[in-house]
Image 1 (cartoon, rainbow, N blue to C red):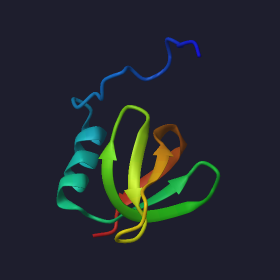
Image 2 (cartoon, one colour):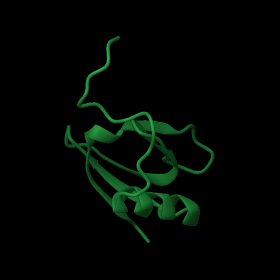
Image 3 (cartoon, rainbow, N blue to C red):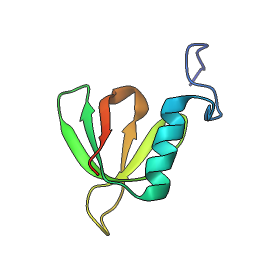
Image 4 (cartoon, rainbow, N blue to C red):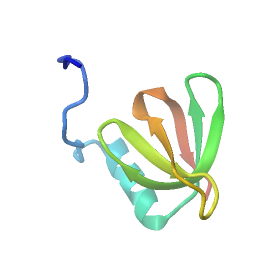
Length: 79
């Protein structure tokens, strides 16, 4: 696959306030509610974030769900 100049860089830009907020939610293990661009909703505990994906554990002990960050329309803490 080729790369495109409008794609995210290989590094996570932690200077962005949104990235710092998500990292704080991950550290605090706060449950999140996500609305996705296809209209579906997902809630769960965020596990990690990288330049392309956010991993969310929908239920304790469940396998993580990887969500493409470009598909997230709304993200908020449930706590």
